[in-house]
Image (cartoon, rainbow, N blue to C red):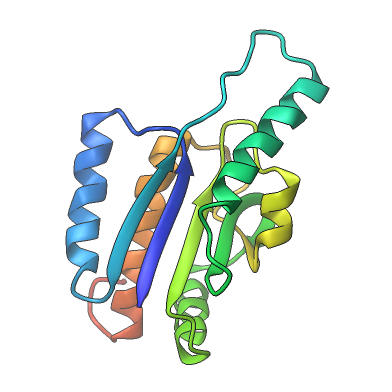
Length: 159
């Protein structure tokens, strides 16, 4: 099983990088993890809605180009389905049972997700209706994937 996490933008904050690395190290006991950072598009000050849509779609196209046809794609989307950690674990486990060898999670850019990415998604997941910085969301996601594997294996991490 392989977990891929595709994100727009480069993670710079050392404390977040350290936290993510810790969970990736823990996840290696259960699966292979690959992190892919795709460069973000510059956003001009006072960009119009049309310009923002063009930027979102450019970023989406760059991400979609990195996804293989056989990957199961879960996008983090404010309009997606909210589920708890146990249901999240079951969803990942069901993907594995159905023979999906790679699950790819996508965190879009600060403007959201473009059309091509939403069309490619197999599942739209909402962690919260609150807005989080994309860099922090990456840490939260990796922690929840780790929690999901602990739940799957009936281990004590999840309480």
